[in-house]
Length: 260
Length: 260
Image 1 (cartoon, each protein chain N blue to C red):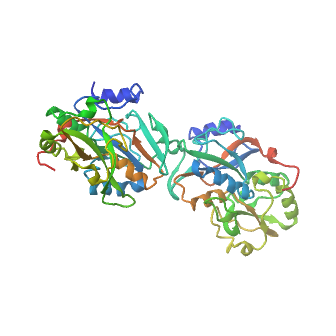
Image 2 (cartoon, one colour):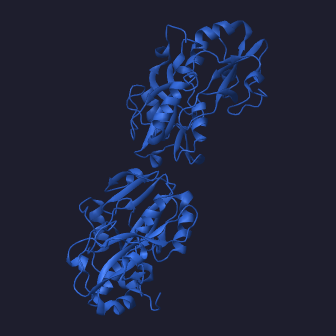
Image 3 (cartoon, one colour):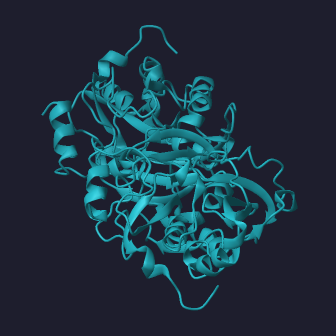
């Protein structure tokens, strides 16, 4: 099935589950929707923190039809599950945000690690969390972000257990996808970035280490959901974890020749 | 035409002008829509300030179909013109708020002076602003309101020139409509309530005095639009001045035996 066919199925509520692996070979994106009054500050925040918040597309105020990344996609209906926040609090979990849309909201699409996971698997680097059928482990860290307007905080990272003899290759491959979080932000000792217990992730699932693997950390798009909440926007709409927007772009289209 | 027929015409955008005089004999209402997080405080504010803010009906969160006051009316479409505010600023003037509705909004209907104007005219008290085809003159005053939650401020009043020999009758008649602002709040010297120049109203039009008339002031429903703005709610939706909700209730149904 093509990305468009998957989005139509999702729009019709015939698929309300997570999206990893759907429309194989195609990239997916994080969704963040904020009031238009905060949009410029959020774009600046993304520009200042491109590792955690690589902006793929910003839509005009009130616009819900995606442009370049997924022509014809309606961000109000074409993701399988959403979280809706009001004043910093969760007010709804829903499969459509038609009821919650407003002309003074601005949608942002942010890069997703599924692309570099695909590239790593293509190169034979195992993704243990996928083999264990779990969500990737994600953690709040003490890595400071560069503030912009009301937005500030620390980075959220994802962690994958990488065989020690494939770490160099992993760095080389992921560095070619800077718009999908790029190369690792840290590896080894989790305490160095403020993580106390790898088996107690803040988001996602714990993933058992395999023999001769080391923990490798990447900046994570969940940062774009956590940071705005602290600014208590009157409205924020996000995809539910793992329930992403499927793009028309293929993973390979985000590969860049020069390393990040 | 009945109230329902008028609302259907308005819903179809076949009438986008002010509503005074439509569906003759039927009452009309002010509309104020606020975020659900502010709804209880606003109801308390209305209860504490019943002269300016006589609450006719409060709808449940997200509910847009009116109950007792106008069964079948949709407050998103059945008023001819709306003002939409975000963060205390006007963001749109529109003939429908379908695009602006959200499940965490709460609608309030507040009494309107058209009812006591009707009663005064029935008794032969002239309404000069209607004869001059003008909106009633409205003014900000220094009359303090009782605060509730984030809501506080001073009263907005409307003024009508009443023949000196009909003032007693005017007080007696309007006092029988407490849910439609009731008896006058002041008469005579405008400076006593902080109004500098009667010919420079803050809202509505200036109205020329006729011989042997005195200015008589009533608490005004515009208070319910002015006060919440100072709390900068993320969303406020109001009727545009003069573009009210036409109720199924007749003016006479609001007459109460005991004086206010």
